[in-house]
Length: 382
Image (cartoon, rainbow, N blue to C red):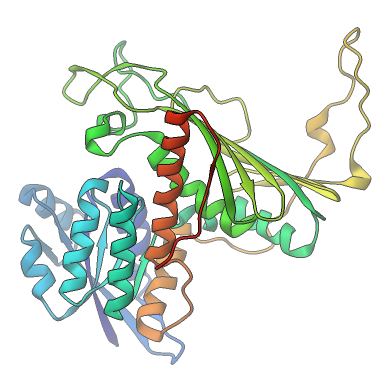
């Protein structure tokens, strides 16, 4: 059995722990590794690295992880470990990835790869020059609901795509009346890399680019709807960055996308995120896992009449797209793609260039808000 050593940094946070450590890396371990094209089994051997030794030790014991460390330099110096992965803070990420590249490691990371576009571009260029493999998480492309949208698109179901409407978000409790907040306080502090525009427009860039058309222009309005919250220590703090974003995008091919993102919205829709795609031949609505479609021959013909209650149950006029295949955890699926890219040179379209494009759109979204105008999205040169 072959072995692949992976350095995991930042896996004590919610996303790093649940999706990357437990449901991806440890899932590979528990299933006996990854079967390569050659038929050989690849053992995944992680080392978890962080500043808090007590946390690292406890995490290692809880999950029977053989290796942990608080010394990142020593981990990067170990030639037996091939990949460095980071799910820590945005503000530290570019510097950590740069150090890992200098140490000869392939790099994989969460997004955003930086809060500064030039830093992101320079990092992508450095990764290219190094000849090492590099990648950024694009998890929403691997959601079952969005994979079903892609299936409909590839089948020609939509005809010409006209528009995309996205709704993302939920109510994040303020923490001041007995219900603790379910997102960390740094999300609401600009100096710590917070803000929903930086967070979510990076996601919407790769979703739109890969599913519906390259983003050509953006208009974005941000807001700080909840100006004061309670932190993890029970102390009040001022929120100095955006907790909601209302963005419109012009896509290559002529489609228009509108996506609302908010941590100050109460959910009355099918899921925490939904995308409605309207085309000349059909429409579809997808959440995280489910997807519903409506072809033009099944489209009802409502007539506007405010003088009587609506007689059409619009929800019943849509058909659910069935599960025609088993969908594994999306983070795990992308992890396996990257590992195969490193070990077998398998195809991989999600390099740090894609991460820089996400930072570009977030930066333009913030600029659009500040200047209250549409902005073109220029092609990046790497």
